[in-house]
Length: 275
Length: 363
Image (tube, rainbow over all chains, first blue to last red; front, side, top):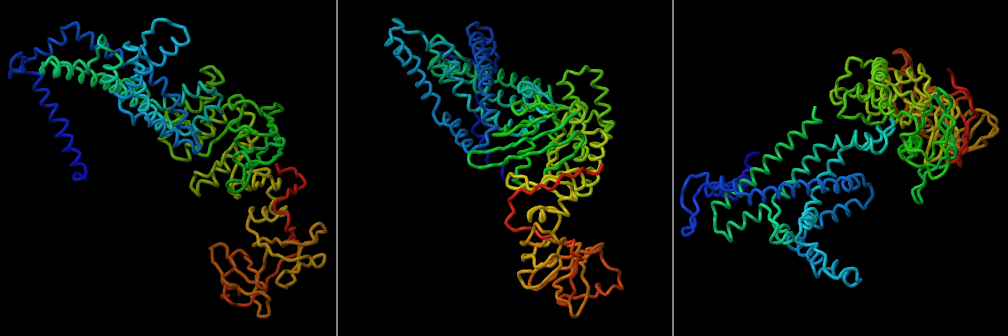
């Protein structure tokens, strides 16, 4: 048994844990404008990040964005996942593949696509101008809304696939039994499907929340320079600011926030119906 | 309480006909079983009564009310699912109380009726358990209680015994039957198991390829099968090809003349005779030959050959000093039956509908 998991353990240790430890060490170093960084053991970078209103704002934006996107993705994904799970025809595998196809296109390419659609000279604005409905282009891109739309489009397939596999495991007969006993479609959903799908719903939301918290390309390309989320902020420190210790500290704050919220969410929601 | 009427109910999926013009009239308090092999349309018929499948033609009438276009939740049927379909996240009591809750029955009244229903199925001690903590038999009794507690107009049973082990099956079948009689429940049951159907139902409906082949009591189907399919499906049956030669003589295709019941309506075709109606005796001058004998404890099966026709006979195992106990494969035997035990069935009727004259079921 151990021999089977050993290669995976080694890869994870070498490529994930190693760099993380290194990053953790860097986050405790001191910034130097001339020497890249100075070896030290200080919490100053963390304190600076927490104290700075700008980074508090970035963190808040990231959290609000991730929560809203997760909630909307769930609202959009659940009906689709239910439909997919209850499909019996030969179209089911085709629809599953169609759900997966967006994952074949990278985030950057997709964000570029959204630019082509939403940009000042994009398809929507060009059409509106062509029809004479507007003279000035509508500001669609470089808004939080654009980032939300772009992000949801990225994470929706993950949500649908996670949910549909859970819904598929709920026997159809259990729903029919509820209907037979007098429950309307909505009551069947509320009393049977939702509680039974809850563990999978929590799993799907956690997965999507993590992806949203770490949105990079979509946030940069569709959010513009005024809109800042955590992952781009971390990158800025490493590439533009050359302040590695501060960037590393931001990275760990993002990691910690994501971790705490997912663990809390799983524990709270998961316990509600677990008996 | 109620009655159930199916009036020309059909279900088509494109070209395929799953259920073909089924007519059925179930009286108050009667238990009717739909019996047939898998794919015969019996489950589709049941699901059309429950409202899970919409008929392409015909009417479903429950208690005088046309429910054909009503959703399942507005039909007042109580269904016991083959898989039981208990709500895994609810306690036994909550499962049973669900239907009452949907009917907005007040808490106190609900608790009282749930307790009563659980007592009825002897599960009152397990009210707080979750379904997964129960045995299969107990889960089934919860499913029964859950369907019974709402006093449905029509009680629906989908293969109620198929998930139980053989030992429990007969016992639970009788228990359900007793409960159904005591509460006077109008019941439609689906099964592929003829023993189950014969033991539990007032009347049976034999289906094949979406059509009703015969409706009647257990005795009707067993003693007077309308066609070869019913003869072969309900109980075991020897079917011997040939033609009627006299009032009570049948000439087998292979040449031998055998006795048959006089019936002017059936000139020729197949002679249907039940294995347990055949007498076998050692006889050096007998026309038959024993091919094999299977000792099954209480009964013995004889695999016989009569002028080239394979015949199976079954009888209670003879006493040790009986000459039949000393028969060996290849021995000549005399094969006899009384004429009334053998009925002639026309061959070309396998798919035709021949209703048996309706008889009142024994109460």
